Image 1 (cartoon, one colour):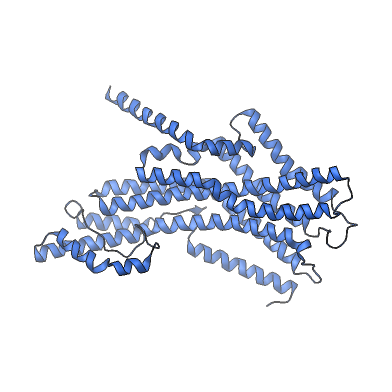
Image 2 (cartoon, rainbow, N blue to C red):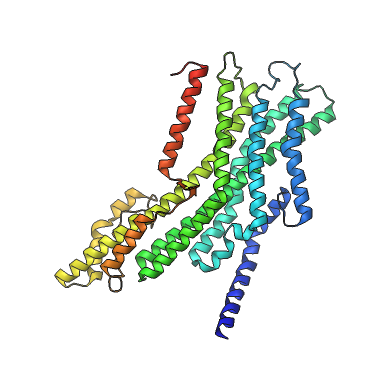
Length: 425
């Protein structure tokens, strides 16, 4: 009977949380429907795949082969259109397929970990809800400047005689091309922003975990269970996004090197009329890739900062226990002296907002000395050192070292390519 009451209580909590989070997700669901990426029912799925096929495959193909304008002047010829269309369509196809899989397999609430928020603190829920509401603004912050630049170019190209079809055909073709560009850009940035949003939730959980570790008289078992839960969520994120991050890196790298190969050829025309669209495509793809890599490395850095925090907490607790044994003064009184000595106001002003609960140089208050022994603290620190958490791609940790490796490989390939085209060695 008690088990049934507990199950009913948990079910009630989940239902209440689901009703609240539905209100928070209403803007996202509406946006999914307007962008035709909602696949909640068969009719929506059919419409979603139709719009994807039209704006990602059919319109770019027709634009490239039917509006090539081989008889146009030098300003209106589209030399780099093939690379631009292939780059945008390939990344958009990858994003749409991954987004469709996420939506179909997990659902929007489960995919964004909203069904787990009932287990989090009030601070985590409020901050994550605020970030969820800001996600649409962040999406348009990246998409709108690119779309305005692309619209300016397309309107100029069609209005100044870029094609010989009638005026009404020009208008329809221009609208279709702009719709295709907007759709492909939004789908790609949407997955990037969702990944950033999920990583932000894990950062909030880690900061809350730091509060538990430092400021609460918790036992080692509860701390260990919470860290295992965070590690499990990081593994889930890595498993869900590893295919998208890996292939996005491959596609964008291939696109950038193809663009570099075309623009460094002898007698290559690099005027804004010819190469502006290619540059805009490269900037858009590179911005999305930076969102992915920055979010992944940031959450990995925060997760690994737990080791430093635990070691500092262990050291401060050990020092405080020895002080108690030698001087027979209460630890709280000694803690005030430590705070005055290590956490001065002048140092806090110099640091600014760069420090948080996970990564700082403040002396850790040791509230748990009476319940956590030296051996338990040492075991916990050893566990953190041997089990570093973070976002991984097929076992490879996405941290700052990985970024340095990626940068080295990209620089080597770029120098090799420049050596084959312009003779740089």
